[in-house]
Amino acid sequence: MWPRLATIAVGGWLMAAPAVLGYGGAAAASDRVVGPVVIAVGIVAASTITRGLRWANLAPGLWLLAGPALLGVPGRALASSLGAGVLVLALTPWGRGDSARFGGGWRSLLDRSRLAGAPEAAPPGRD
Image 1 (cartoon, rainbow, N blue to C red):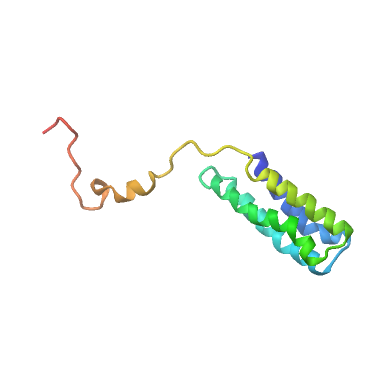
Image 2: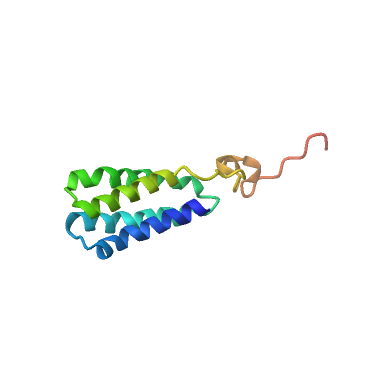
């Protein structure tokens, strides 16, 4: 759980960094778009059932590393973006997967004995 909370904090920093560090332009726009995405993925991935969604933060993390070179970002904004990108990429795989099964998966939907109106199958050995 704590890696997701740290990811949410990094997203919050990205949204605040342009005002705190005093930069604007393309660097600020990038941080203000990527920050909420990182926060949203962190919030959704905090739940056990949606923990696998944490891998969606790979794309914003890679953008935070590559974007400054493409956008020509100045010094403080460059350091902020690179640091946030490294943190997002480092925190993304951190954490355990879920060990429980939720809802039975596709098999439960396709199980004919559970379909509405279908008679239940008798247990083996009983008539």
